View 1 (cartoon, one colour):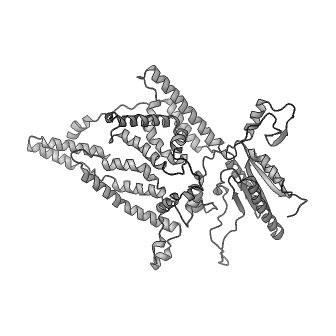
View 2 (tube, helix red, strand yellow; view 1 turned 180 degrees about the horizontal axis):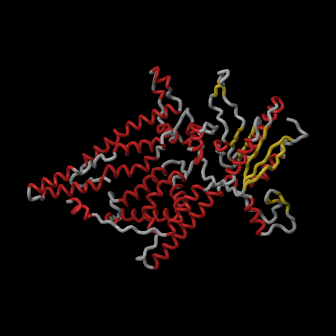
View 3 (spheres, one colour; view 1 turned 120 degrees about the horizontal axis):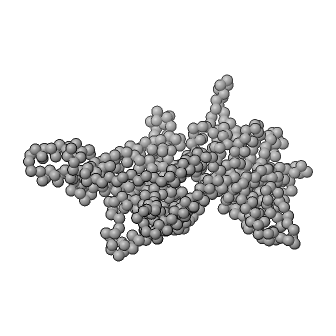
Amino acid sequence: MFLKGNILKSIKFKNTVPLPFSYWVLVTLRFALTLLPQTGYIHPDEYFQNVEVIAGDIFDVDVARTWEFDPKFPIRDCMLKSDNVIYHQEYLQEKYKHAVTPMERVRIYKMQTHLPQHSLNNVLSLASLVVIGIFNRPTFIGFALIPIFFWLHRGIGSKIVGFADFHARIFMLVVCGIPMVLLCILVDSAYYGYLTLADIESLQISWSNWVVTPLNFLRYNTDVRKLTKHGIHPRWLHLAVNVPILFNVLGLLAGCAVILNTYRFVKGQYSKMPKIQSIRGLMLLSAITPLAVLSLFPHQEARFIIPILVPLVYLYGNSIHICEVDDMDVKTLKKLLIIVWYGLNMIFAIFFGFIHQGGIYPFINDLYYENKGSFGSHMHVITTHSYSIPTYLLQLESTTRIWKDRTTKHSFTIAPSTFIHKYGSLPMDQLFMNVDEVLSNAEMRYHKYKKKYKLYVVSPCSLEKKLFGEASKYQYINLIEHSSYYPHFCTEAFPNFPSENDKSCVKGSKIISNNAQTGLTVLERISCFINQFCLKVFHVKVNETYTL
């Protein structure tokens, strides 16, 4: 009764604000977009960093393991409210000191004994979560640093929590993290084949049997020569490009807030800045710190900073919400911001969900059914200037699993029959040197072992003229258009806007020639330009008049 009558009265409970109908419409749309099959392909790692590997482990299909999961040098792991108590205890201690009668002191003392422990509250769960996050990706420490500091720092400055508690929390956090560290190392070592049951049974275990993926991650990413394979970016890319693309209005508001608080700090106006122990201070630093840490690395991708969306929404979500107390100028500004927010999010949802690299998934779907009906023959697919094909979507039988014949008891593996050749943005002359090599080997197997084959070249439509031009240099190569998929946007082969005197234009699946005297109209040029945002599949055959 004492707690209810004195402590809880000091807590202010706000009435729940009813959510607008538009919110529930957007929530429904969000679930619909999650469940709706989308042709968009945002980034190769959305497949190759998770489902591509998992599908190979669980469904036992043939997959393409990226360098992060290479057993020779793995860098990816395969694991996946106490403040109130402090204030209550401080309040009760104050009441105990000022108690007049012994009976009152006994009653307050009993209340103190019923308060739960707070200094090391949830330390085991917190330490385990931090370890799993770091093993999953060591840059997680940039996102966890500020929340962990706030957990360590909570209650500092009160009469019952001092720096001894702060250091005790650090010590216990480290100690409680050790079991999860050992478990992650054990699981990774077994998963990548460094530690086997035979090693454990024979007790022949050395340092070479253990793999620590976060250390491998740091060793790899501190080597600039290796990072150049994935692209070197300027240090300001996250701040100047990735934040506006990912968060648009929220990113702009956050930038303005950082500039304003920096000005206040320089001018010594500390009282106007968020308090270090406040929730706003926690959220602001949780957005700034990981952005600053990740900007130190020369390889920067937008997906790396997606988690800072949570603090940005908390801090500035209300800044674009119109309130009744706002004056007309503020309401006008908020209306503009919310229109920009909704508009850009709708555009990017459509673009990245259905247009960006949008031809890859439909092509894989058709290739799956074609491959399913081509038993006994080889299938070669050469991709250029497009994202890699997720192999697991083809549902090929594993070529690494060891099978055993029940009759003869002989062990064997299945030979691959589908070959995906990924050549990125290789120049056209070098690309066709590889096409020539693949075609020659396939023809050799056909004439020697009667092994039938199909060879496809998959390319953006904007490269069609270059493909046919380079193919014409090989008299025995016959390039035949097989299929096309629209839309397909890729920056690797962005089409040129046609001029008035452009002699050829891709329209549908035909190449048409224009009258040199009339030229193209503006609408024809725009139509020609838009039609080039597609993906084409070309069947490569040997001319019947030639023999390799």
